[in-house]
Length: 416
Image (cartoon, rainbow, N blue to C red; front, side, top):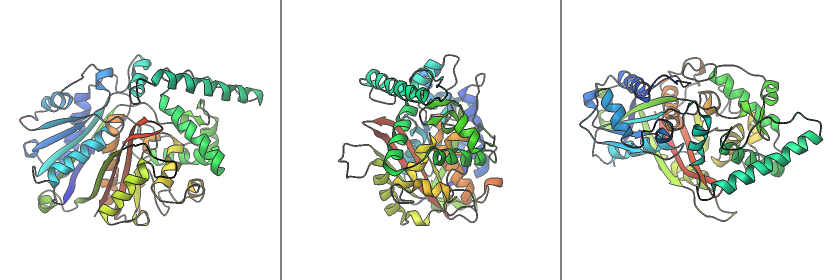
């Protein structure tokens, strides 16, 4: 297998684009990647396109990549459409890397794109509800709403303001209930606090304020985070990733020819994709299992990482992923955030882009957007959020959920 490098990256500012088509968002991201690599469209030999929800939101069920790329003049090449829930474009990147590593193609485009905003919010949330076992979804929703009703009753009994959140799958993503349940379990087992979850949101929103591509660029205090409207106890609105639209693209090539396009290529040291599985309580889940494989493939350990973009669809998810990636021992994620270890100036900066919480989470674009951030960080091109002299970075992106853990997980290790 050949070594693979990234030579270009581009993305649009994530946000609300009700009157802008996915064709335009994707075009701008691809052109940004081509420009940064100094390539022309005709040099792209194949493309893999990640998207999760176009069928529900726009009605474009099939040939999504072909429709979007043809509009900007890219055709006559293999175009593969990839859907893997929130891991759609990290999966597309994985396949693009395999195309190059195998020797089949020398230059390949990996594109992630999504439009989630719709006048009917139920349609948007239906996209998330389809990322679980749909035969069980109605029972799941009923259980989640019953649990939140019980927690709300307990809050009211304590004299706290009642939550105004509606039902899971109607006014919020059902995944916030999954994350909330995981957060409560972590709090009960390890003594983790709402304040520690809140500090992650403070950090990521502050990082997002430094990122011109971020959907939200406001700075919030811990009090702001904790006092924002309750979504699913203990998650407040500012602890949850927002709905958004966007696109991100990267250009991959054989490392042996990367010098033709740039003098600052970023190597793909490892590209792993796996799925959740049935396992015992004493056995590793999908994230630690894939992380171990990625570290072994890249020849690094968690102690070698200089910058990380991980799947913080909620603030508690980031904290728990610290532990799953081996950045600390189980139960010590709260200590990491308290000590500032994961700040931009800390020992292991995490989600310098603002993460999903502030940069946004247009699900089909998220995985490649994470890779764009690590690409820019390793090249010293991250502006005000630049980490000091990074050499190795990692992305972790999960998608969907089956039987209590992510259905798909993709981890990439990049280096210079």
